[in-house]
Picture (cartoon, rainbow, N blue to C red):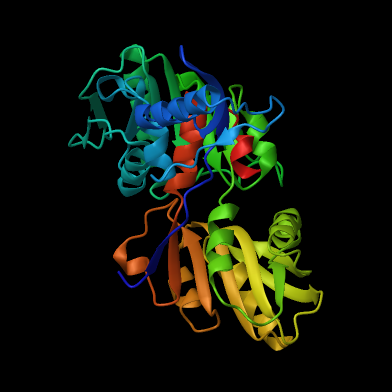
Amino acid sequence: MAAKAAAAPSSSALISSRRLSSPAASLRVRTPRCVMGSEQVRVVVEEEGKRKRMGVAEPRSAPPAVWTPRAPAQEARLAALRTDGRDSRLKIFSGTANRPLAQEIASYLGVDLGKVLIKRFADGEIYVQLQESVRGCDVFLVQPTCSPVNENLMELFVMIDACRRASARSITVVIPYFGYARADRKAQGREAITAKLSANLLTEAGSDRVIVCDIHSTQALGYFDIPVDHIHGQPVILDYLASKTISKDLVVVSPDVGGVVRARAFAKKLSDAPLAIVDKRRQGHNMSEVMHLIGDVKGKVAIMVDDMIDTAGTITSAAALLKQEGAEAVYACSTHAVFSPPAIERLSGGIFEEVIVTNSILLPEHKCFPQLTVLSMANLVAETIWHVHRDGSVSSIFQ
């Protein structure tokens, strides 16, 4: 693959407290994810007992000790669970849309990807059979509804129904890229609001919760009648940009007025960089025209931020305008790489220094080009799944 692959650093582990007790001593220890191996517990208790026998008492007002694990966060979190009972109620299944991402998520959580048989009949109908028991389990179905959108969406419906009829305790659909999200309002008369229809169908199919990443419009979250956890791909891209040595002044650019809030939040996290806005007039579906620039980009490195890149018409036209206004280099950052034709020709034309996306959508070989960098969001999604499974706070991941 011509794309450069980069794995984002793992998300920070949740710090929690547990009181340890023994006949010899009592000590409160703060540990990541309630994880402390038996050897660490023994050493801490013995050291406390020695201090008491020597008559050296630790003041009660002293801050609690902090134990730092040497193992990676995902391994340390699972170290306290018994091997025979580790995550026995956590099941992760994948559709056919992005199985590599689901495999990364399962590996991060230390569980095996669920076995499921998915095939097509001769007339195109979808057949799904779970190859293992899910009775009483928390089931997470990973399936982005990318192209072919209708096939992947229907496949997700059938998977939900199979889990429901197999007596799963809860069914959470993990949709890294939510198709039809752009059809979230009636721009003209007699139009369908397909985002609302998709939300209704997911609920009626039997899903109990939805996890989506960077949905096109946050108002679409209100279309669901079930709980929705909305996660952001910005931390993955920000970590990557922080690792690069960009000496020039940075300016974050929104390719359209609708993305100003997203770009402002991105700029604030990127060392409070200045903000510029590209004003455009859309002439039709998948067609746009850039009008003028609001802000100063002369002699600066422009970081363009958007939730998705479809045909790349908007972001390419905006990049051309930034070059005309004196930008030294232009980087394109997006969570979802839809890449509908002629996106590849536009993005690989040399106007961009680098195009940075995540693997929320599986990119085939013919959609890769030298300037493309694909970042893995598996750790971010896996942490969200873990928090939901353990009834934890999802928002704490991004704080």
